[in-house]
Image (tube, rainbow, N blue to C red):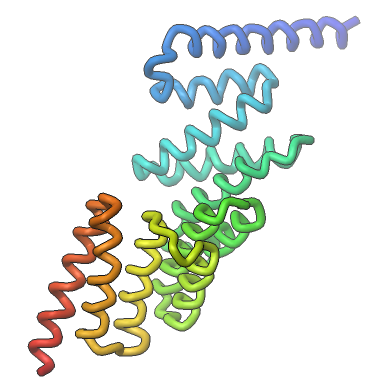
Length: 231
């Protein structure tokens, strides 16, 4: 009888949290991002694991974007716990979880752990552009440890994911990263690197990738000035 009573209390508690979460969704739909954390909390206590996964992951990404790294990692750990229990494949969620956890770990200087997370995300990503973007991040995290040959390898693996005529922003970023790595790993001539930047910036200009244009213009100026000094 006691067990039945406790079961009824637990069911009512879960129903209460489900109603609260549904109410938040209904009342604050236009600024739902402000309530990710509350939704994650209530859906988890409601036993609604699928919705809890969604909002815990969104809470983690939101915290990471605000550099609340400890909070982000806590949310990601909770997501991982629920994903492990779930009978659903959740490939997209697992891919995003490992990628975003990798970003936070890279930011706080835990490069080995970040590398493992990025590699794990590649097991779940199927989209070529998503995979290419992860390879770019792998390239940068490896470059942090001055392992330029491996960094170059990761960038090339990313480029291999994309078609030769691809003009995506991911392709532009990968090509730009390769230029920078070649500057420090192979000591390529500055005039050659500047020419490569000119070729990349044409695509960035055509496609309207303004932040990438700014980086490339800075690289071109740097390589040109370095070439003048060396000559």
